[in-house]
Image 1 (spheres, one colour):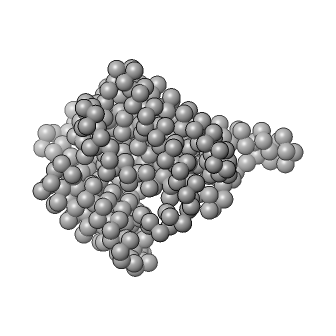
Image 2 (cartoon, rainbow, N blue to C red; image 1 turned 180 degrees about the vertical axis):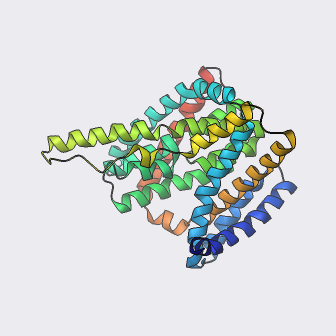
Image 3 (cartoon, rainbow, N blue to C red; image 1 turned 45 degrees about the vertical axis):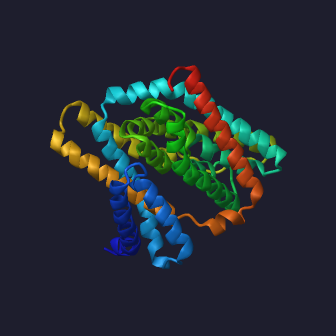
Length: 335
């Protein structure tokens, strides 16, 4: 009961704005409820000082509600579709991931950005935004301000991507699968990938979600590799112990297993057509709620306080991933 009480104010605020945004999305389908949600959320957060007791509910909406929405999306996708999409796009994801870290390291040195912050920006851009940063930061022993700066930088380009990518995809004449691959590869955070994908089309949103979930699983091997590298570095420095604590159980995105379970149930034909329609509506509503919460978390004052250089690095790495993702997808005939 206490938990629900602490979440209540934030859930109520997010729910009201999400309801308005969902309605506007029905009136203006080319824009979509998710875009309205994130924009109205940003305006509310930066023009009105929210009560402190709303933060827990907002944070819950941006994380847990989004995960539930993704699980529901699995109810409309067969396991064969999930497997086919994941295997077809794996090469593109590996290339962009490697380029993300290379660009973060190289340009980070040129901009004289601390190596740990550059690593976090590379991980956030190449894997899955704030979740990757949160998973990697204890492994490389990042400082609190480095974590905050990195998340703010990634967050800024998440918002830009949601607003720009769908229009850019239409201008480039991308197919649903092509845009889904591009958005799933080049957009940082899961919530932004889902929003951008479904703003383009339902098919693009489904495809982008699978690509993104495949990309998200890269958190585990990358975190393990970094833990080993930090451990070797510590030994070379004769410090005697390895770096920050690391646990696969702690960093693995477990909701992906529920997504696969939902997909299995769909593959077995256990969902009726009417139920699937309700599931689709519920998933879309949850996505709008999650994106509204993301907007309500965007503090431009805090973003500008991070300074120019991390923002420049974030922009460069994001452009490298976006351009390389589009180029590799085009070369492999997937666009």
